[in-house]
Image (cartoon, rainbow, N blue to C red; front, side, top):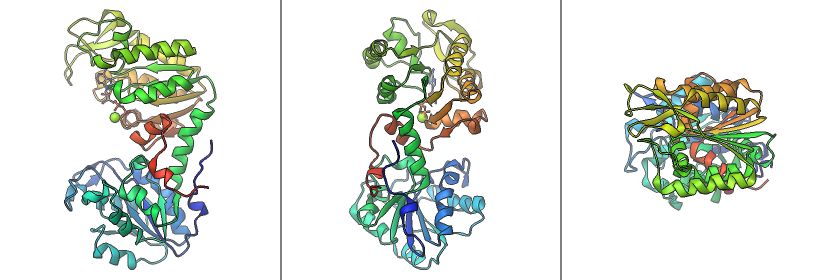
Length: 396
Ligand code: ADP
Ligand code: MG
């Protein structure tokens, strides 16, 4: 399935004011960007627009401000500075979003210049998709471009609003994300191995369901494995578990069996007596988890089992770590799986904020075919949902 919306390539942008929603929702520490992945991801579209001589107006949210006015710790200024640093461009910033000051800064823009507006969420109306907000933002541009894949699943003022007033196009990042994450499910090269982990079954139900429909093998790890164990009749000690989802987990196991999809669950586990940095791991088989122990990672036999399955794959989709990888003593499972994916010549697509953080931690990011910049948005796409931001764009 190809991307079905118009992109910036279709837009006439020379000398035009291009209002672009980007995802500059970056982590900050003491006013400095600690991970610039999202800023980097927006550069191809910004460069393209600049080369075409557009006046570029960038807007984004950052963090979760209250929405009652400016909060310095959520300012987009550090992101604007980062963009300047990465591109060498002169990037202007205005500490206003919807007021006269913002308007004046937009009016002063020359062809090829770049302006970053202040955080769109400093006003409550943004999240409510208030039409006044959309109208004000739209008045800054002649053309609207959406490149904020990470927020494309949210029907908020700056994401979908301007498309009601301006011709609306996708940026290159949005196009690539949607294209990659949909085509992998439409026609995966087989065997297609899906890996799902993370903490909860409940947060990934839609994804798991969809993967059982498309994958040949589904590998399960992380905290969610224990709810599947309960469905299989194992006891799980003090492991993370969701009693209300045991039945659903059982149904999924059954559905997979009926469809001939192989589900792999951990055969051994690294368990600990409490959840903490000082916790020590010990290895137990999956049907022998002691009552006073909790599962923190997949065990060594499981690492090998999973790595073998990944080795045979032509396509891998991965969402969710195999264990509590933030603690080094419980990171081996996630690292082993990451290395197996990195070493394979399969097409590998990674989604999910924590999974991406894990891969970065192991320094394996450049070994993957595609790392999605959007956690929630990528999950919704994988579930087969339409993203409101994308829906609002012009059809190709
Ligand atoms: P992603 O952001 O990649 O979608 P999730 O948010 O679903 O992933 O899950 C990531 C979290 O799951 C991590 O913080 C990790 O510590 C936690 N996790 C993984 N395995 C376990 C486990 N066995 N017990 C508790 N938490 C776990
Ligand atoms: Mg997460």
